[in-house]
Image 1 (cartoon, helix red, strand yellow):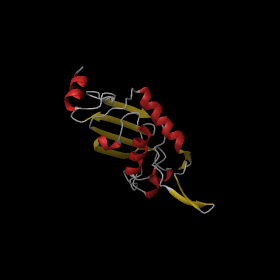
Image 2 (cartoon, rainbow, N blue to C red; image 1 turned 180 degrees about the vertical axis):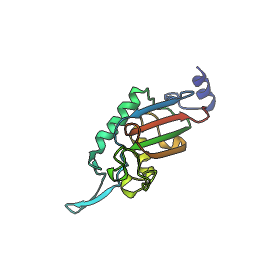
Image 3 (cartoon, helix red, strand yellow; image 1 turned 90 degrees about the vertical axis):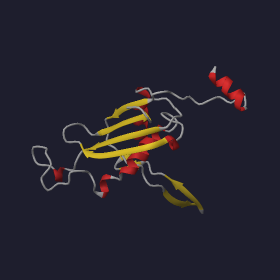
Image 4 (cartoon, rainbow, N blue to C red; image 1 turned 60 degrees about the vertical axis):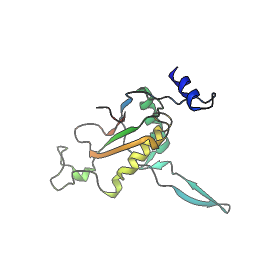
Length: 172
């Protein structure tokens, strides 16, 4: 009822419905799949008309299927499209190339500690892939994010995958 009194006192149109705002919103889930970066848009000319498209094949996998896996995990975890200030933490765990491993599965002393090679993907593109997948599922607009964090690390002791935490700003 607070909404009705507020909307009438500030003159908001009566048929306008508020978007769901949830107090203490927290979404925490994991997707056990190889993390994929958001592919760069491609440009082509077909029959004299320019066309912009996003490739579906990224690192040998279907990007559309990857996005569906993220959405399915978020929905299973109870995602709701909210309108509150949010922060996101994305943790990407990737299997290191065999060339960096000893026979016992540990990193060679000469190996880099984190996946920073160009072929490993940019952290911001991993973040974009996850957030674009969740747009309209876990939040209404990506402008709601006031804090973003992405970590890329080798999955030496566990499966590769993505761990996503989205929380309302101010929650401990």
